[in-house]
Amino acid sequence: MLSERQAVIFKTIVDEFTKTAEPVGSKTLVNLLSMRCSSATIRNEMAALEEMGLLEKTHTSSGRIPSSKGYRFYVENMMETQLDDNVKHSLQQVFQERHYTLDEIVKKSCDILSQMTNLTSLVLGPDSRCQRLQHIQLFPISERSAVAVFITDHGHTENKTFQFDTTVSLNDIQTCCNLLNDKLCGTPISSVVEKMKEIKPLLTASVSRHEVLFQAFVNAFIRFASDNVYCSGQSNMLYQPEFADIERLKQLMKMLEDSSVWRQLANTEGDLAIRIGNDNGVLQMDDVSVITSKFHLNAQEEGQLMIVGPTRMQYDRVVALMEYMSKVIEELYSEEY
Image 1 (cartoon, rainbow, N blue to C red):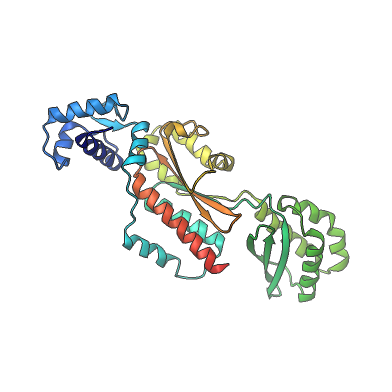
Image 2: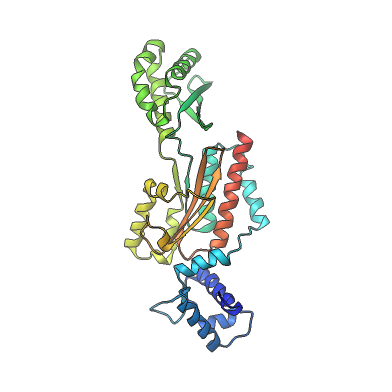
C-alpha cells in the first residue's frame, strides 16, 4: 500500500512520462508537485517505489520511468476515465452528418480513435463465418446496380451494393434471388461460395444474365465471409520513440497485418481488457500495450475495438474514448436495426 505522498509522486511520474517519453527526475518533480518536498525526500520515495517494482531506472538517465507492474497498478488503482462533454458532443456530430452503414460506422470509429490517440487502432467486426445464411433480399436500384441484404441465423444483417457490367432485368434478379434462397438457406457463411458453384448449372438454366449475377454474388459472399478486421493509424507508430529501432518497428508492422494475431488477443471476458507489456503473450513485445473494448450488436453478436501502442500511453484518455465509441456504435446500430 502506498503512502499518500508516494501515491502523488508515482501518479505524477506516470502522467509526466506518458506525455514526454522522458525519464522523470527529482528536480522535475519538485516543480510539478503541489506538495512541498525536498529533492532528497523525493529521491527516497522514488527509491522505495523502485523497490516495490513500480518504477524502473534507465541506463541513460538518473530519472525513473513506470514499469509494466507500475502501469498495471496505475490502471487498477488510479485511473479516472471521464470523457469531456465537448469531446462527446464532437463525436456525436460526426455521425450525424449523414446515414452510415454498420461497416462504415465501425471503420469510422476506428479512424477516429487512431486520430485522437495518435496510436494504432483496430476493429474486429462480428465473426459471421460460423453463422448460417437465413435469407437473401435483393433490391434493384437501376438496370446496372442493386442492393443485396443478407440475414444470418444470428440476426446479423449485411448490406452489399452490386454494380453490374451490363444491364440485368428485374425478372433475372428476382429469379436469382428466389433460387439462392431455396438452395442456400441454412448453409454456413464460410461454405456459401462452394455451394454456389454447385448450383451454378441451375442458375445458368434459369437466368439469362447468369454469369453477371453469379460473379456479383460470389464476390459479395467472399467479402461477407472474410475475416472482418480493419486497422487504422499504423503510421502513428513511426512517431513513437519506443519504435525508433527499425527492426522492432518492422516486427510490430508485420503483426498489425496478421489478423489471426488480433483474433487471438480478442477479449473473451468482460467488456474491457487492458493488456500491458508481458500480458500480451501472443505479441512477444514487452513494451506494447493492447486495450480492447467490446460493442454488442445483439444478444449473440459482438465486435471489439482495439488500441495498440507503447506501454507509455495515456490509459485514462484512451479507455474513456474506447468505451464511449463502443457505446456510440451500439446506439447507432440499435437505431438502424
